[in-house]
Length: 107
Image 1 (cartoon, rainbow, N blue to C red):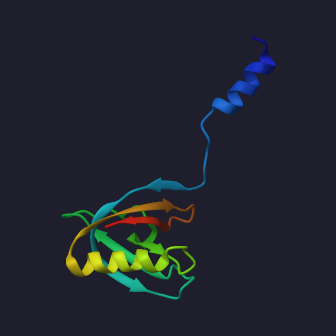
Image 2: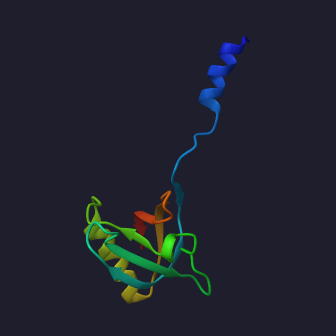
């Protein structure tokens, strides 16, 4: 193979570097905090036995803003899990700022 073909292949095969990190913490909702709708509006804190599943997030919480396309259902699921002491799994994105945005909720 010639060098230009190898270069093209390397570009497509090389891993993609992103500015956000996806992860899926699991635990009980230990606390909720409601702020302004676009200011990390609905915040949850998790606990899992003696550990903090959100310890890698800024201020150890994950949030969902009112602009999320399924905001009401996600908040409802989180509050229901909180009041029933049922575990949840968050599918979240850790932003470059360190804050963790909730993308999906499993209750």
